[in-house]
Length: 176
Image (cartoon, rainbow, N blue to C red):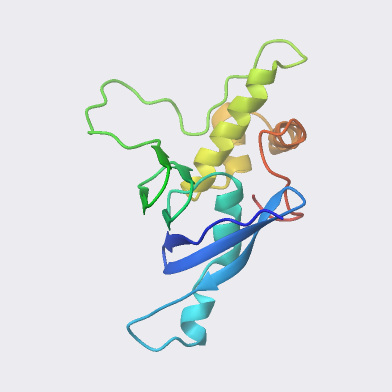
């Protein structure tokens, strides 16, 4: 059984730990501290499902990794990694604001002209999916609109990306 070290989630501020269950990381530990009283209102405000979904998608933009072993934090936002041991932090989307020209449409995927689609296409689907999830968008609908294809088509692409190992197993009825 694989278990992660404790990681700090920053919105709201708490420590979380995950355990691998059949290829999907599930939240199995939660530590909450507050300067005020810890009550049911505070506990209900912790978005367990969203934290779990973002962790599984590799979108750790709200995580600060702290520990004494090997820590890898990869995400699309602000990440702070501290600790003793080997630490690797990769951040996408940070910049100095010096971008010139037009930005590509959010969630747009270039569909290859012929089938079967190449392996790289499903990697691109997974990458865009994770980016949108990290930013709080509904990935399937956003990709469908931006790429001018039906949502059922995007659902099929995502299912294929999962089967090829680019995305973790999903949960029925949940974006993950």
